[in-house]
Image 1 (cartoon, rainbow, N blue to C red):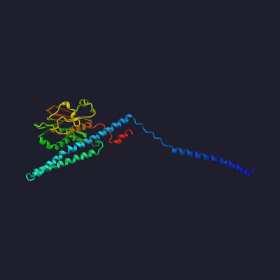
Image 2: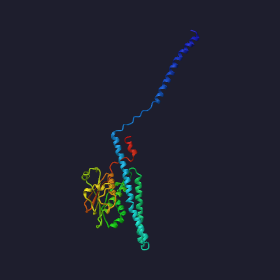
Image 3: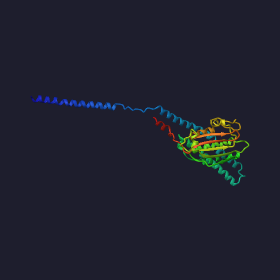
Image 4: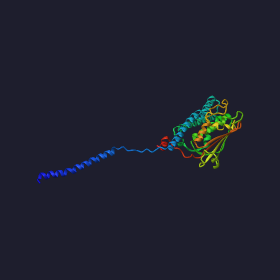
Length: 320
């Protein structure tokens, strides 16, 4: 075999494996490209009917919370804020009209009352604004001394109590987990109701007391949790009372038992009280006799049961 033939044979033998290796590389590159281009399939978790229903219930609860806040703000603006403002106006007028007749100590007394009422008014506004900025009342829950709540409420009603020559008898009240702002509104509306529906010829007498409920008593109320400690706060008065068959109606929005002339109003106060108490997983009910006074019973837990998530985003994460 000549040298040229050997060279030709050698070239043929070398060229075959080179072509095969190149083919494999191209095939591998194509496969890698296809793998990279292949879209990632994400399997979404299935939303069950039960989870969806649970979320709807939670969102409905938050909507009710918002609606209750709107009712409360409208009511507070037209009622609770008016009492300290009324005191400021009246005491200011007394000072203006009797500037030369009043003694220095009397002037000092009225100025102190104006200052205290101003501080009280500012505190109510601050609490209302704080409450408005929170999506869930549970963020504001603190250990609340109901004795202090009662003290502030009676201070607001100081003028009305004097005008009606009313007597308020208070016994020791408990401390509970609550939003002070809401407890203040609860006490305000109930006591205001007792002062408002007093007899024309009899000085009002209001007695506020409390007691711890027994396990048996808690179990007798189907809406209460027997694993939690409850207190009953009673507000008893000697006013015009009501027929017991209307005991539920007095807690209904815009429902009033009186004709309206002698006792004007919308009936919204006790309706909001019921919303507040229900919101605290408690109960409120009334007992009364016509022309023989009424008793409002408020059952509230010492601590709140398990709470809902704080906001809509957290709620949605439970199933999305």
